[in-house]
Image (cartoon, rainbow over all chains, first blue to last red; front, side, top):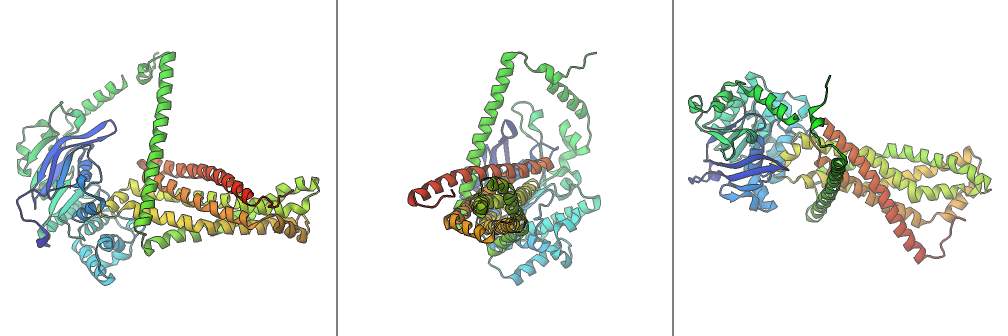
Length: 277
Length: 288
């Protein structure tokens, strides 16, 4: 699929002054980010900082309140329904809990995007599905099973196979290792890396697992919850290579990467007190 | 010992504060109602626009037709039969006191085909299928399956709602006919076998007073009931709030609002249709 990739120097994804609000709650404020083609970007940050919202805004599942998201130079908000569908085929999205369709078998789940968008016969679909499942290390026998019959790790791998079946140019991973044992987490990390080796794909990985961020990413961006930022301060508190994370002087970044609560528990207790008085 | 809750203590006290809170609450309810009505209208318009633009594939339609039609038949047949018998039991003593027990067939069958058959079939459909739709779509919303559909370039309304809508509007007339038929059989069996009504008079009065328009009006109304059930239930599922509680609330709201709409539509269409009918056919026979 190398011919599908535009080799120009322009970034594949550009986010400009992105602001997302739900009612009175602002989740993202003035976020600016560019993702060059071929890069694997990890977005880290504690729960509730807006990582998943950011990812869903990139694909148009959440509409920005302000700002714009450009994919390959096109503003997704300006596209009509048909054009948006054409762009979405270029994305692959691995959801946090895989989001497999309960009512379908594994084979039907992986074949779903092909049946929706490609004029291919059943034989070709079966061939592609089995190839994708083999790529993520799943046996042919799973095709007839329902998602409920699989373990969490297997479901994640099926989700990955489904996301890759259309040969996407941009892969979005939402917490790919959450809820998995350390070995299965590493299997998923290896799969993310092998995907990058075998497909010319740009990837954005949302995670709070530092092992994943360090292992798979070329670049790490850390988002911080808006409610705890000073007015006017950027929500991105780190943007650089994973190797530089340990040298970062920002106490909040160091705390996060080392998994230290620090004064956070005290802050939580104080915020509870201030809410109730 | 002071055990005052700081949250309660922080609220403003006094009559005007309470009045202002109450007004704010009512304002919130009004805003929510207007927003929901607008949202539901837009949702329905999207469904109708897909009906014109492109119909779902056969393999997407068939499971919904099976779920709505085939699986609902036994319960609707059973409830229809009992409603027919209950009508016979409830009407008999009043009609006997009036010396009109031979007209029992007319009142049972007219009530069934005009009102109880369609409303009963629609209520059962709202309970059995509407709740299931809201719960299923709500779970899909909560577990991001609807987002997954959208991310793969499929329109969730086209893929999930349109097949359910079509299944409801096409199959509810069949279910209504089944409820009518079983109700008629149940009422007849009970009246003739247990209440000793003469069979000839039972059927003679039925065919004299029950017209094909009565049957048609019930079936015609049922299409609107089906549309309301599908739209309300799918809308509730799509707008489900997170968690098990959210899914439960969506299912409950789907049934309650479907039932309310069934009765409102029944009243409005019933009034309109019979006003028009008696204007066009002023000599149509009355029961008494």
